[in-house]
Length: 279
Ligand SMILES: C[S@@+](CC[C@H](N)C(=O)[O-])C[C@H]1O[C@@H](n2cnc3c(N)ncnc32)[C@H](O)[C@@H]1O
Image: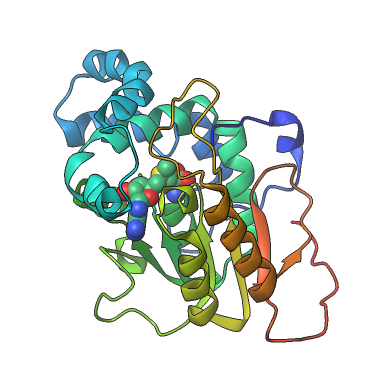
């Protein structure tokens, strides 16, 4: 999904709050430079600033061209793990830099709900995982991504941004050492990439604490110009997804005008808390 809705960017500014002694990945820093994204990506890829600037605008088209065309659910994982390589680094960097106001609102949302053990499933270039790791109320961030280049980049960024002691990258949820359950689950712009997003939702429901929150969005659409050929859009798959969502989760209102939703487990009935102050 590639939306930019800057109107509500003047809302509360709690994301990646400064800590007494820890790193300060603030909203202002993200809006200014995506947490040093251009510099870090150029260095990681061994490109000059000019070479990176020339490649960023092509990121989305290059990624779309990589995709073989027709969906093969058996090949979806291999596509992200073996074929994409650096493709998503460039595509996601272009998006996060070009739609920084929209991404910033998802960071505000994350800062409002994130605490304890945080799972970022399909973490990409790490903007959310890194910002979450800098939050004082977050104990640790577990960033999952099938793409080894994404994992290497996020871990490398975490070291440079001073949050490596609170963040680690893993291939999947079966990795050793992961908590059985998480307090916060973040899964942004990933569900439409999965051959069975309903099954993934069920796994999320099983791995989320009763008091936890899940921040989710999805875009089961290949784009008005076919620019997202790797997005699943089968109506039966989408219906299974919504049935599972409505069976397992209850939506929690939040004030940001973005497509990302906040949920709590429906099975764990609990009193609705009074809305917390936004800053
Ligand atoms: C569109 S990107 C979104 C990245 C990030 N969440 C963001 O909002 O910028 C989708 C990410 O999901 C990852 N991914 C795809 N299938 C996955 C799977 N089965 N398990 C873990 N990660 C997966 C891809 O490698 C990619 O980094």
